[in-house]
Image (cartoon, rainbow, N blue to C red; front, side, top):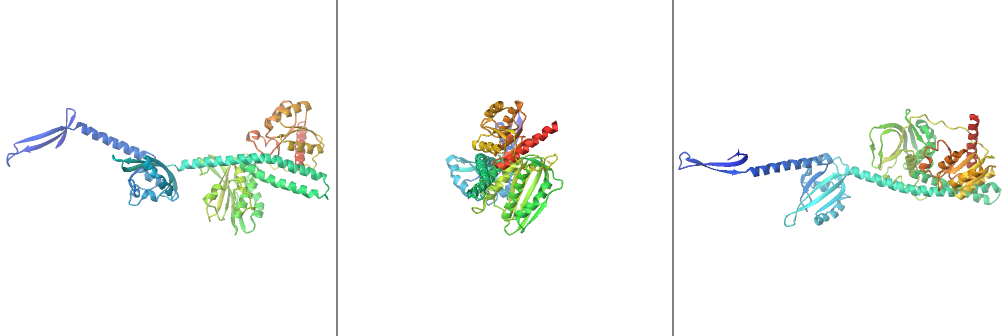
Length: 556
Protein backbone atom coordinates (compact mmCIF):
# COMPACT_ATOMS: atom_id res chain seq x y z
CA UNK A 1 0.00 0.00 0.00
CA UNK A 2 1.37 3.40 -0.89
CA UNK A 3 0.38 6.97 -1.72
CA UNK A 4 1.23 8.60 -4.99
CA UNK A 5 0.66 11.98 -6.60
CA UNK A 6 -0.76 11.89 -10.09
CA UNK A 7 -2.33 14.68 -12.08
CA UNK A 8 -2.49 16.91 -8.99
CA UNK A 9 -4.34 14.33 -6.96
CA UNK A 10 -3.30 12.07 -4.11
CA UNK A 11 -4.09 8.38 -4.53
CA UNK A 12 -3.97 5.61 -1.98
CA UNK A 13 -3.02 2.48 -3.94
CA UNK A 14 -3.27 -1.07 -2.63
CA UNK A 15 -1.74 -3.93 -4.66
CA UNK A 16 -1.96 -7.69 -4.13
CA UNK A 17 -0.44 -10.54 -6.23
CA UNK A 18 -2.64 -13.16 -7.93
CA UNK A 19 -1.59 -16.81 -7.53
CA UNK A 20 -2.61 -19.97 -9.32
CA UNK A 21 -1.60 -22.66 -6.89
CA UNK A 22 1.83 -22.30 -5.27
CA UNK A 23 3.67 -21.21 -8.31
CA UNK A 24 4.93 -17.73 -9.06
CA UNK A 25 2.30 -14.92 -9.13
CA UNK A 26 0.30 -14.91 -12.27
CA UNK A 27 -0.49 -11.22 -11.98
CA UNK A 28 -1.29 -8.25 -9.73
CA UNK A 29 -4.63 -6.78 -8.79
CA UNK A 30 -4.86 -3.33 -7.33
CA UNK A 31 -7.21 -0.62 -6.15
CA UNK A 32 -6.46 3.13 -6.27
CA UNK A 33 -8.56 5.55 -4.22
CA UNK A 34 -8.55 9.33 -4.54
CA UNK A 35 -7.78 10.54 -0.96
CA UNK A 36 -6.98 14.13 -1.85
CA UNK A 37 -9.82 15.63 0.21
CA UNK A 38 -9.07 13.42 3.20
CA UNK A 39 -5.41 14.41 3.17
CA UNK A 40 -6.29 18.09 2.90
CA UNK A 41 -8.71 17.73 5.82
CA UNK A 42 -5.99 16.08 7.92
CA UNK A 43 -3.56 18.88 7.05
CA UNK A 44 -6.17 21.50 7.95
CA UNK A 45 -6.88 19.72 11.21
CA UNK A 46 -3.18 19.66 12.07
CA UNK A 47 -2.85 23.36 11.25
CA UNK A 48 -5.87 24.12 13.44
CA UNK A 49 -4.48 21.98 16.26
CA UNK A 50 -1.12 23.78 16.07
CA UNK A 51 -2.81 27.16 16.00
CA UNK A 52 -4.98 26.32 19.00
CA UNK A 53 -1.94 25.05 20.88
CA UNK A 54 -0.13 28.32 20.17
CA UNK A 55 -3.13 30.32 21.37
CA UNK A 56 -3.51 28.27 24.54
CA UNK A 57 0.18 28.36 25.41
CA UNK A 58 0.56 32.03 24.50
CA UNK A 59 -2.51 33.39 26.30
CA UNK A 60 -2.09 35.07 29.73
CA UNK A 61 -4.73 32.72 31.16
CA UNK A 62 -4.44 29.16 32.48
CA UNK A 63 -6.79 26.87 30.53
CA UNK A 64 -8.11 23.73 32.21
CA UNK A 65 -10.56 20.86 31.71
CA UNK A 66 -12.21 18.70 34.37
CA UNK A 67 -15.00 16.19 34.74
CA UNK A 68 -18.27 17.39 36.28
CA UNK A 69 -19.11 16.28 39.81
CA UNK A 70 -16.77 14.44 42.15
CA UNK A 71 -13.63 16.16 43.39
CA UNK A 72 -13.01 17.98 40.07
CA UNK A 73 -9.65 16.40 39.28
CA UNK A 74 -8.11 18.04 36.23
CA UNK A 75 -7.93 16.21 32.90
CA UNK A 76 -5.95 18.97 31.18
CA UNK A 77 -4.20 22.18 32.20
CA UNK A 78 -2.14 24.54 30.03
CA UNK A 79 1.59 25.10 30.62
CA UNK A 80 0.94 28.64 31.94
CA UNK A 81 0.14 27.10 35.32
CA UNK A 82 3.89 27.06 36.01
CA UNK A 83 4.60 30.61 34.80
CA UNK A 84 1.55 32.12 36.53
CA UNK A 85 1.30 30.14 39.76
CA UNK A 86 4.59 28.24 40.02
CA UNK A 87 3.07 24.73 39.84
CA UNK A 88 4.13 22.21 37.17
CA UNK A 89 1.67 20.51 34.83
CA UNK A 90 2.52 17.13 36.39
CA UNK A 91 1.67 18.46 39.87
CA UNK A 92 -1.62 19.86 38.61
CA UNK A 93 -2.63 16.61 36.90
CA UNK A 94 -1.57 14.40 39.81
CA UNK A 95 -3.86 12.11 41.80
CA UNK A 96 -4.75 14.75 44.44
CA UNK A 97 -7.57 17.30 43.96
CA UNK A 98 -5.06 19.97 42.97
CA UNK A 99 -7.50 22.83 42.33
CA UNK A 100 -9.59 22.57 45.50
CA UNK A 101 -6.58 22.03 47.74
CA UNK A 102 -5.12 25.39 46.70
CA UNK A 103 -8.18 27.62 47.07
CA UNK A 104 -8.15 29.87 50.13
CA UNK A 105 -10.11 28.16 52.95
CA UNK A 106 -12.21 31.29 53.45
CA UNK A 107 -13.23 31.35 49.76
CA UNK A 108 -13.96 27.64 49.26
CA UNK A 109 -17.42 27.59 50.94
CA UNK A 110 -18.55 30.49 48.77
CA UNK A 111 -17.38 28.73 45.61
CA UNK A 112 -19.26 25.58 46.60
CA UNK A 113 -22.39 27.69 47.04
CA UNK A 114 -21.95 29.34 43.64
CA UNK A 115 -21.09 26.18 41.68
CA UNK A 116 -24.73 25.03 41.15
CA UNK A 117 -25.26 28.16 39.08
CA UNK A 118 -22.83 26.69 36.52
CA UNK A 119 -25.08 23.66 36.01
CA UNK A 120 -28.15 25.90 35.69
CA UNK A 121 -26.85 28.51 33.24
CA UNK A 122 -23.96 26.65 31.62
CA UNK A 123 -21.40 29.30 32.56
CA UNK A 124 -20.23 31.18 35.63
CA UNK A 125 -17.40 33.50 36.77
CA UNK A 126 -15.73 33.07 40.17
CA UNK A 127 -13.21 35.30 41.93
CA UNK A 128 -11.18 33.78 44.73
CA UNK A 129 -7.69 33.52 46.20
CA UNK A 130 -5.42 30.80 44.85
CA UNK A 131 -2.17 29.71 46.48
CA UNK A 132 1.01 30.30 44.51
CA UNK A 133 3.78 27.69 44.80
CA UNK A 134 5.71 30.27 46.87
CA UNK A 135 2.92 30.25 49.45
CA UNK A 136 1.60 33.69 48.44
CA UNK A 137 -2.14 34.09 47.87
CA UNK A 138 -3.06 35.46 44.46
CA UNK A 139 -6.50 36.69 43.36
CA UNK A 140 -7.85 34.93 40.25
CA UNK A 141 -10.86 35.37 38.00
CA UNK A 142 -12.00 31.91 36.88
CA UNK A 143 -14.46 31.77 33.96
CA UNK A 144 -16.09 28.33 33.65
CA UNK A 145 -18.32 26.75 31.02
CA UNK A 146 -20.24 23.46 31.18
CA UNK A 147 -20.27 21.30 28.02
CA UNK A 148 -23.09 18.77 27.59
CA UNK A 149 -23.63 15.53 25.68
CA UNK A 150 -26.30 15.23 22.99
CA UNK A 151 -28.75 13.95 25.61
CA UNK A 152 -28.14 17.06 27.73
CA UNK A 153 -26.10 15.35 30.42
CA UNK A 154 -22.94 17.14 31.66
CA UNK A 155 -19.83 16.02 29.74
CA UNK A 156 -16.99 18.21 31.01
CA UNK A 157 -16.20 21.62 32.48
CA UNK A 158 -13.71 23.91 30.75
CA UNK A 159 -12.40 27.24 31.93
CA UNK A 160 -9.53 29.65 32.22
CA UNK A 161 -7.98 31.36 35.25
CA UNK A 162 -6.51 34.88 35.08
CA UNK A 163 -4.32 36.40 37.79
CA UNK A 164 -6.12 39.65 38.78
CA UNK A 165 -4.11 40.44 41.95
CA UNK A 166 -2.84 43.79 40.66
CA UNK A 167 -6.34 44.72 39.48
CA UNK A 168 -7.70 43.91 42.95
CA UNK A 169 -4.99 46.04 44.55
CA UNK A 170 -5.87 48.99 42.32
CA UNK A 171 -9.56 48.57 43.19
CA UNK A 172 -8.69 48.51 46.88
CA UNK A 173 -6.52 51.61 46.49
CA UNK A 174 -9.41 53.41 44.81
CA UNK A 175 -11.94 52.34 47.46
CA UNK A 176 -9.59 53.36 50.27
CA UNK A 177 -8.85 56.68 48.60
CA UNK A 178 -12.55 57.41 48.06
CA UNK A 179 -13.38 56.47 51.64
CA UNK A 180 -10.62 58.61 53.11
CA UNK A 181 -11.52 61.52 50.84
CA UNK A 182 -15.20 61.33 51.82
CA UNK A 183 -14.41 61.19 55.51
CA UNK A 184 -11.87 63.97 55.05
CA UNK A 185 -14.38 66.27 53.38
CA UNK A 186 -16.87 65.67 56.16
CA UNK A 187 -14.27 66.22 58.88
CA UNK A 188 -12.91 69.33 57.19
CA UNK A 189 -16.34 70.90 56.77
CA UNK A 190 -17.29 70.26 60.38
CA UNK A 191 -13.96 71.54 61.68
CA UNK A 192 -14.21 74.72 59.58
CA UNK A 193 -17.56 75.73 61.06
CA UNK A 194 -16.58 74.59 64.54
CA UNK A 195 -13.39 76.66 64.47
CA UNK A 196 -15.45 79.81 63.92
CA UNK A 197 -17.57 78.94 66.95
CA UNK A 198 -14.51 78.20 69.07
CA UNK A 199 -12.87 81.48 68.05
CA UNK A 200 -15.95 83.35 69.25
CA UNK A 201 -16.39 81.26 72.43
CA UNK A 202 -12.77 81.47 73.53
CA UNK A 203 -12.35 85.05 72.35
CA UNK A 204 -15.32 86.50 74.16
CA UNK A 205 -14.38 84.53 77.28
CA UNK A 206 -10.95 86.18 77.13
CA UNK A 207 -12.46 89.63 76.69
CA UNK A 208 -14.81 89.05 79.60
CA UNK A 209 -11.91 87.95 81.80
CA UNK A 210 -10.19 91.31 81.23
CA UNK A 211 -13.25 93.09 82.66
CA UNK A 212 -13.91 90.84 85.69
CA UNK A 213 -12.05 91.29 89.00
CA UNK A 214 -9.82 88.42 90.07
CA UNK A 215 -11.95 87.80 93.18
CA UNK A 216 -15.19 87.40 91.20
CA UNK A 217 -16.76 83.88 91.44
CA UNK A 218 -17.66 84.11 87.74
CA UNK A 219 -14.00 84.28 86.78
CA UNK A 220 -13.40 80.57 87.42
CA UNK A 221 -16.34 79.66 85.16
CA UNK A 222 -15.01 81.82 82.34
CA UNK A 223 -11.55 80.31 82.67
CA UNK A 224 -13.08 76.84 82.42
CA UNK A 225 -14.93 77.91 79.26
CA UNK A 226 -11.67 79.17 77.77
CA UNK A 227 -9.83 75.91 78.61
CA UNK A 228 -12.64 73.84 77.08
CA UNK A 229 -12.43 75.94 73.90
CA UNK A 230 -8.68 75.32 73.74
CA UNK A 231 -9.16 71.55 74.09
CA UNK A 232 -11.84 71.55 71.43
CA UNK A 233 -9.56 73.59 69.17
CA UNK A 234 -6.86 70.94 69.35
CA UNK A 235 -9.41 68.30 68.26
CA UNK A 236 -10.57 70.34 65.27
CA UNK A 237 -6.93 70.87 64.36
CA UNK A 238 -6.47 67.11 64.22
CA UNK A 239 -9.59 66.71 62.09
CA UNK A 240 -8.31 69.33 59.66
CA UNK A 241 -4.91 67.66 59.53
CA UNK A 242 -6.50 64.34 58.59
CA UNK A 243 -8.73 65.94 55.96
CA UNK A 244 -5.72 67.78 54.50
CA UNK A 245 -7.54 71.08 55.01
CA UNK A 246 -5.23 72.33 57.73
CA UNK A 247 -3.38 75.51 56.89
CA UNK A 248 0.31 74.67 56.98
CA UNK A 249 3.23 77.07 56.99
CA UNK A 250 5.95 74.89 55.44
CA UNK A 251 9.66 75.54 55.63
CA UNK A 252 12.63 73.83 54.03
CA UNK A 253 14.09 71.70 56.81
CA UNK A 254 17.42 70.06 57.45
CA UNK A 255 15.99 66.71 58.49
CA UNK A 256 19.07 65.54 60.40
CA UNK A 257 18.87 68.63 62.64
CA UNK A 258 15.11 68.26 63.03
CA UNK A 259 15.44 64.64 64.20
CA UNK A 260 18.26 65.53 66.62
CA UNK A 261 16.10 68.29 68.10
CA UNK A 262 13.31 65.76 68.70
CA UNK A 263 15.40 63.45 70.90
CA UNK A 264 14.75 65.21 74.23
CA UNK A 265 11.04 65.49 73.55
CA UNK A 266 10.74 61.83 72.54
CA UNK A 267 12.67 60.70 75.64
CA UNK A 268 10.09 62.42 77.84
CA UNK A 269 7.18 60.94 75.88
CA UNK A 270 8.23 57.28 75.76
CA UNK A 271 9.56 56.94 79.34
CA UNK A 272 12.65 55.37 80.84
CA UNK A 273 11.80 51.71 80.16
CA UNK A 274 11.98 52.19 76.37
CA UNK A 275 15.34 52.60 74.65
CA UNK A 276 15.39 55.38 72.05
CA UNK A 277 17.76 54.93 69.10
CA UNK A 278 18.10 57.82 66.63
CA UNK A 279 20.01 57.28 63.43
CA UNK A 280 19.61 60.29 61.12
CA UNK A 281 21.74 60.14 58.01
CA UNK A 282 24.29 63.00 58.02
CA UNK A 283 23.89 63.47 54.25
CA UNK A 284 20.11 63.40 54.17
CA UNK A 285 18.37 65.78 51.77
CA UNK A 286 16.06 68.58 52.81
CA UNK A 287 12.26 68.49 52.78
CA UNK A 288 9.47 71.06 52.68
CA UNK A 289 7.08 70.65 55.61
CA UNK A 290 5.59 72.62 58.48
CA UNK A 291 8.12 72.08 61.35
CA UNK A 292 5.41 71.98 64.01
CA UNK A 293 3.40 69.46 62.02
CA UNK A 294 6.42 67.20 61.49
CA UNK A 295 6.98 67.29 65.23
CA UNK A 296 3.35 66.32 65.78
CA UNK A 297 3.64 63.39 63.36
CA UNK A 298 6.72 61.99 65.12
CA UNK A 299 5.16 62.51 68.56
CA UNK A 300 2.00 60.66 67.52
CA UNK A 301 4.03 57.74 66.17
CA UNK A 302 6.17 57.67 69.33
CA UNK A 303 3.09 57.65 71.59
CA UNK A 304 1.58 54.73 69.67
CA UNK A 305 4.91 52.87 69.84
CA UNK A 306 5.06 53.47 73.60
CA UNK A 307 1.56 52.04 74.05
CA UNK A 308 2.56 48.98 71.99
CA UNK A 309 5.48 48.28 74.37
CA UNK A 310 3.92 48.18 77.87
CA UNK A 311 6.83 46.09 79.18
CA UNK A 312 9.53 48.20 77.55
CA UNK A 313 11.41 47.78 74.30
CA UNK A 314 13.27 49.77 71.67
CA UNK A 315 12.08 52.66 69.51
CA UNK A 316 14.25 53.46 66.48
CA UNK A 317 14.00 56.73 64.55
CA UNK A 318 16.10 56.78 61.38
CA UNK A 319 16.34 58.63 58.08
CA UNK A 320 17.70 57.80 54.65
CA UNK A 321 17.34 58.71 50.98
CA UNK A 322 16.03 56.65 48.10
CA UNK A 323 15.94 57.32 44.37
CA UNK A 324 13.01 55.61 42.68
CA UNK A 325 13.70 55.01 38.99
CA UNK A 326 10.33 53.31 38.56
CA UNK A 327 7.01 53.65 40.45
CA UNK A 328 7.00 51.81 43.79
CA UNK A 329 3.88 49.67 44.05
CA UNK A 330 2.26 49.31 47.46
CA UNK A 331 -1.09 47.59 48.16
CA UNK A 332 -2.63 50.90 49.20
CA UNK A 333 -0.94 53.37 46.82
CA UNK A 334 1.70 53.84 44.11
CA UNK A 335 4.69 56.11 44.82
CA UNK A 336 5.90 57.95 41.68
CA UNK A 337 9.58 57.91 40.63
CA UNK A 338 11.98 60.54 41.91
CA UNK A 339 14.17 61.43 44.90
CA UNK A 340 12.57 60.77 48.28
CA UNK A 341 13.61 61.23 51.88
CA UNK A 342 12.49 58.40 54.16
CA UNK A 343 11.77 58.71 57.88
CA UNK A 344 11.33 55.38 59.67
CA UNK A 345 9.86 54.89 63.12
CA UNK A 346 10.16 51.29 64.26
CA UNK A 347 9.27 49.62 67.56
CA UNK A 348 9.64 46.16 69.08
CA UNK A 349 6.08 46.07 70.38
CA UNK A 350 3.17 43.68 70.09
CA UNK A 351 2.49 44.39 66.41
CA UNK A 352 -0.82 44.40 64.57
CA UNK A 353 -2.95 41.97 62.63
CA UNK A 354 -4.04 42.71 59.05
CA UNK A 355 -7.56 43.89 59.93
CA UNK A 356 -6.15 46.52 62.31
CA UNK A 357 -3.51 47.67 59.82
CA UNK A 358 -6.18 48.37 57.22
CA UNK A 359 -8.07 50.74 59.54
CA UNK A 360 -5.23 52.33 61.46
CA UNK A 361 -5.38 55.73 59.71
CA UNK A 362 -9.17 56.12 59.98
CA UNK A 363 -10.26 59.00 62.25
CA UNK A 364 -11.71 57.99 65.63
CA UNK A 365 -10.58 54.38 65.19
CA UNK A 366 -8.70 53.24 68.29
CA UNK A 367 -7.95 50.03 70.15
CA UNK A 368 -7.70 51.86 73.48
CA UNK A 369 -10.32 51.80 76.18
CA UNK A 370 -13.04 54.45 76.19
CA UNK A 371 -11.66 57.73 77.45
CA UNK A 372 -8.01 56.80 76.84
CA UNK A 373 -7.69 58.13 73.32
CA UNK A 374 -9.55 60.02 70.58
CA UNK A 375 -8.38 57.85 67.68
CA UNK A 376 -7.10 60.95 65.88
CA UNK A 377 -3.34 60.60 66.36
CA UNK A 378 -2.49 58.46 63.34
CA UNK A 379 -5.19 60.01 61.14
CA UNK A 380 -3.60 63.37 61.92
CA UNK A 381 -0.19 62.04 60.91
CA UNK A 382 -1.71 60.66 57.70
CA UNK A 383 -3.26 64.01 56.78
CA UNK A 384 -0.14 66.05 57.52
CA UNK A 385 2.07 63.77 55.42
CA UNK A 386 -0.38 63.67 52.52
CA UNK A 387 -0.83 67.46 52.58
CA UNK A 388 2.95 67.78 52.43
CA UNK A 389 2.95 65.73 49.16
CA UNK A 390 4.27 62.65 50.95
CA UNK A 391 3.25 59.08 51.74
CA UNK A 392 3.00 57.13 54.99
CA UNK A 393 3.00 53.33 55.22
CA UNK A 394 2.78 50.82 58.03
CA UNK A 395 4.23 47.30 58.11
CA UNK A 396 3.47 45.12 61.11
CA UNK A 397 2.90 41.56 62.27
CA UNK A 398 1.63 40.23 65.57
CA UNK A 399 4.54 39.72 67.93
CA UNK A 400 7.08 41.27 65.55
CA UNK A 401 6.67 45.00 66.12
CA UNK A 402 5.60 47.82 63.83
CA UNK A 403 7.42 50.02 61.33
CA UNK A 404 6.07 53.30 59.96
CA UNK A 405 7.68 54.75 56.84
CA UNK A 406 7.21 58.39 55.84
CA UNK A 407 8.28 59.39 52.33
CA UNK A 408 8.70 63.11 51.59
CA UNK A 409 9.96 64.65 48.33
CA UNK A 410 13.60 65.73 48.53
CA UNK A 411 14.08 69.48 48.05
CA UNK A 412 17.35 70.77 46.60
CA UNK A 413 17.18 74.18 48.27
CA UNK A 414 18.82 75.78 51.28
CA UNK A 415 17.09 75.32 54.64
CA UNK A 416 14.83 78.15 55.79
CA UNK A 417 16.58 80.21 58.49
CA UNK A 418 14.84 80.21 61.86
CA UNK A 419 13.08 83.43 62.88
CA UNK A 420 14.39 84.43 66.27
CA UNK A 421 12.96 87.95 66.43
CA UNK A 422 10.92 88.43 69.62
CA UNK A 423 7.19 89.08 69.36
CA UNK A 424 6.11 92.57 70.39
CA UNK A 425 4.82 92.72 73.94
CA UNK A 426 2.34 95.54 73.25
CA UNK A 427 -0.48 94.99 70.78
CA UNK A 428 -1.79 98.58 70.71
CA UNK A 429 -1.80 100.92 67.74
CA UNK A 430 -3.70 103.57 65.80
CA UNK A 431 -3.51 102.24 62.22
CA UNK A 432 -6.53 101.77 59.96
CA UNK A 433 -7.56 98.13 59.53
CA UNK A 434 -10.14 96.55 57.19
CA UNK A 435 -11.57 93.22 58.44
CA UNK A 436 -13.30 90.85 55.94
CA UNK A 437 -14.96 87.87 57.66
CA UNK A 438 -18.27 86.19 56.77
CA UNK A 439 -18.93 84.76 60.25
CA UNK A 440 -20.55 87.62 62.17
CA UNK A 441 -19.46 86.38 65.63
CA UNK A 442 -15.80 86.16 64.58
CA UNK A 443 -15.96 89.47 62.71
CA UNK A 444 -17.40 91.34 65.70
CA UNK A 445 -14.85 89.72 68.01
CA UNK A 446 -11.93 90.87 65.82
CA UNK A 447 -13.36 94.37 65.47
CA UNK A 448 -14.05 94.68 69.20
CA UNK A 449 -10.57 93.46 70.15
CA UNK A 450 -8.83 95.90 67.81
CA UNK A 451 -10.99 98.86 68.85
CA UNK A 452 -10.03 98.26 72.49
CA UNK A 453 -6.37 98.47 71.43
CA UNK A 454 -6.83 101.84 69.76
CA UNK A 455 -7.04 100.83 66.09
CA UNK A 456 -9.39 102.45 63.58
CA UNK A 457 -11.31 99.49 62.12
CA UNK A 458 -14.07 98.72 59.63
CA UNK A 459 -15.70 95.35 58.88
CA UNK A 460 -17.17 93.64 55.79
CA UNK A 461 -18.85 90.25 55.45
CA UNK A 462 -17.76 89.44 51.89
CA UNK A 463 -15.56 90.58 49.03
CA UNK A 464 -18.12 92.87 47.37
CA UNK A 465 -18.78 94.79 50.58
CA UNK A 466 -15.03 95.01 51.25
CA UNK A 467 -14.40 96.67 47.85
CA UNK A 468 -17.26 99.14 48.35
CA UNK A 469 -16.11 99.97 51.88
CA UNK A 470 -12.50 100.49 50.82
CA UNK A 471 -13.64 102.83 48.04
CA UNK A 472 -15.62 104.98 50.53
CA UNK A 473 -13.16 104.76 53.41
CA UNK A 474 -9.94 105.46 51.57
CA UNK A 475 -6.39 104.25 52.30
CA UNK A 476 -5.82 101.75 55.12
CA UNK A 477 -2.79 100.03 56.61
CA UNK A 478 -3.84 96.39 57.09
CA UNK A 479 -6.26 93.95 55.50
CA UNK A 480 -7.42 91.09 57.74
CA UNK A 481 -9.33 88.61 55.59
CA UNK A 482 -10.69 85.11 55.91
CA UNK A 483 -9.21 82.80 53.30
CA UNK A 484 -12.56 81.35 52.20
CA UNK A 485 -15.44 83.80 51.73
CA UNK A 486 -18.93 83.15 50.33
CA UNK A 487 -18.45 85.09 47.08
CA UNK A 488 -14.69 85.24 46.53
CA UNK A 489 -11.44 83.96 48.02
CA UNK A 490 -9.36 86.04 50.40
CA UNK A 491 -6.33 86.38 48.10
CA UNK A 492 -8.63 87.62 45.32
CA UNK A 493 -9.99 90.33 47.63
CA UNK A 494 -6.41 91.38 48.37
CA UNK A 495 -5.54 91.46 44.67
CA UNK A 496 -8.56 93.57 43.73
CA UNK A 497 -7.91 96.04 46.56
CA UNK A 498 -4.28 96.45 45.50
CA UNK A 499 -5.54 97.08 41.97
CA UNK A 500 -7.20 100.17 43.39
CA UNK A 501 -3.72 101.48 44.29
CA UNK A 502 -4.08 100.76 48.00
CA UNK A 503 -0.82 100.07 49.85
CA UNK A 504 -1.39 97.81 52.82
CA UNK A 505 -0.15 94.73 54.65
CA UNK A 506 -2.20 91.50 54.73
CA UNK A 507 -3.07 89.06 57.48
CA UNK A 508 -5.11 86.03 56.46
CA UNK A 509 -7.20 84.17 59.04
CA UNK A 510 -8.81 80.75 58.63
CA UNK A 511 -9.31 77.39 60.23
CA UNK A 512 -9.65 75.65 56.88
CA UNK A 513 -7.22 75.35 53.99
CA UNK A 514 -8.79 75.68 50.57
CA UNK A 515 -6.02 74.53 48.25
CA UNK A 516 -6.90 76.90 45.40
CA UNK A 517 -7.16 79.87 47.75
CA UNK A 518 -3.79 79.48 49.45
CA UNK A 519 -1.61 77.75 46.86
CA UNK A 520 1.81 79.38 46.97
CA UNK A 521 0.63 82.20 49.26
CA UNK A 522 1.32 81.37 52.90
CA UNK A 523 5.09 81.57 52.57
CA UNK A 524 4.74 85.15 51.31
CA UNK A 525 2.03 86.51 53.62
CA UNK A 526 1.27 86.39 57.32
CA UNK A 527 -1.32 83.98 58.60
CA UNK A 528 -3.33 83.54 61.81
CA UNK A 529 -5.03 80.15 62.21
CA UNK A 530 -8.41 79.74 63.90
CA UNK A 531 -9.27 79.38 66.69
CA UNK A 532 -7.17 82.24 68.05
CA UNK A 533 -7.30 84.32 71.22
CA UNK A 534 -7.63 88.13 71.30
CA UNK A 535 -4.13 88.47 72.75
CA UNK A 536 -2.66 86.27 70.01
CA UNK A 537 -4.57 88.28 67.44
CA UNK A 538 -3.32 91.73 68.52
CA UNK A 539 0.28 90.51 68.80
CA UNK A 540 0.18 89.12 65.25
CA UNK A 541 -1.44 92.31 63.96
CA UNK A 542 1.31 94.38 65.56
CA UNK A 543 3.98 92.08 64.06
CA UNK A 544 2.59 92.51 60.55
CA UNK A 545 2.22 96.27 60.85
CA UNK A 546 5.74 96.71 62.28
CA UNK A 547 7.17 94.56 59.48
CA UNK A 548 5.38 96.81 56.96
CA UNK A 549 6.85 99.95 58.57
CA UNK A 550 10.32 98.42 58.55
CA UNK A 551 9.97 97.57 54.85
CA UNK A 552 8.82 101.08 53.98
CA UNK A 553 11.73 102.56 55.94
CA UNK A 554 14.24 100.39 54.11
CA UNK A 555 12.82 101.45 50.75
CA UNK A 556 13.15 105.13 51.71
